[in-house]
Length: 409
Ligand SMILES: Cc1cc2nc3c(=O)[nH]c(=O)nc-3n(C[C@H](O)[C@H](O)[C@H](O)COP(=O)(O)OP(=O)(O)OC[C@H]3O[C@@H](n4cnc5c(N)ncnc54)[C@H](O)[C@@H]3O)c2cc1C
Image (tube, rainbow, N blue to C red; front, side, top):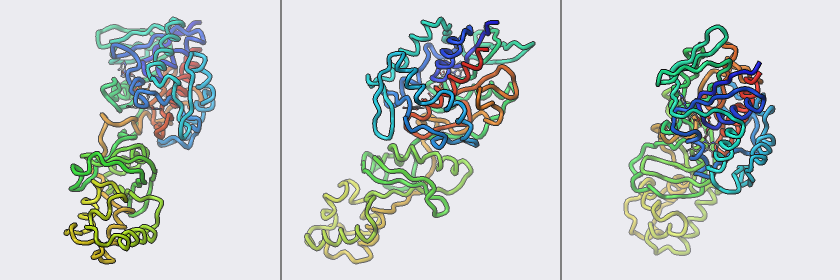
């Protein structure tokens, strides 16, 4: 008998679940609280939608049990995803680090083809439908929306996302719906997010960019590191390497631990090499004022801050007068500058939610709840989050497709 599938949440995972369930012959309704589906998708990849990564594998994911992704990632792999989108019209290109974008460089084109396919298949999309309750009676699910309507289905797929970017409609309320059905959630915290640092200089440093290395330091050990374009801001620090390592910081901050950020502005050089280089520059131009002698080596706006941090007060004296220990202090700051991390920029700035519905309660091969038969989950609502670079959307596609397929019979 044809199954009625109700999908709660019209984001990436909800839309693909709708396509896969309908292709298998199920009747499908997507309920979306916003006036239109796919709001967050439009914001992805800076509006270009980094929709997958050719390097995606289990090791690119976090959560209490990252291996959970294996089933769905195998069933609907990166290759399948590329084929799926190409068939719908998304010509793609592979950029640095295996990041995949549509040739059009427009996230809206990804949304357009998904919507076209949903419409072609006859999936019913109901917008402005905020689901406030889900219950199960006599093998049927009753899904109630804020306006008092009740939808009856044989299967429900919860794809309401996490808490990141609440303006997109995902504010964590779906996790509460799942809890009412007996599920539990791990602790949630923002990930792929900028970091707020402690220090007196950030207003002055705001806007300074450098290509370097960033590390999260806990108990004097480096526990996460990444390299690339880093940007000082008026609250602390941003840039792809910061987002990439932010999860470790967030996790520790969540349990009230003291965590530090280390930046290496002159990454790639050893202490000895950098010290020698500074000394060489002093030998060549010893009469230059201290601050001017660093022009051409580091960003000009960094110079007074680095010198002040190194305890150097008079910047106008000839650089040849710098003592060995002053040169050492400057060298240390350029290679190992540490700041206490005060927090993350929070849900409004985060790209993904760390934590979610406990994956122990879900069958990894079907995405069906182990606790409530006929209830399925997909996407960011689950306790799975990926690295920056297309991995989170891949998780939405893999888990969403798998959930839709298995909910259809
Ligand atoms: C700025 C930004 C950029 C990003 N860039 C990338 C990128 O380039 N590549 C990448 O892989 N990942 C990226 N991500 C992450 C990725 O977008 C998400 O992980 C993914 O979209 C999650 O999909 P989802 O379907 O699980 O949830 P969402 O996309 O959050 O969709 C959930 C939907 O459910 C709806 N909803 C919620 N509650 C209810 C309710 N009670 N009733 C009805 N509807 C409800 C919401 O309105 C929303 O439309 C980015 C995220 C952000 C915020």
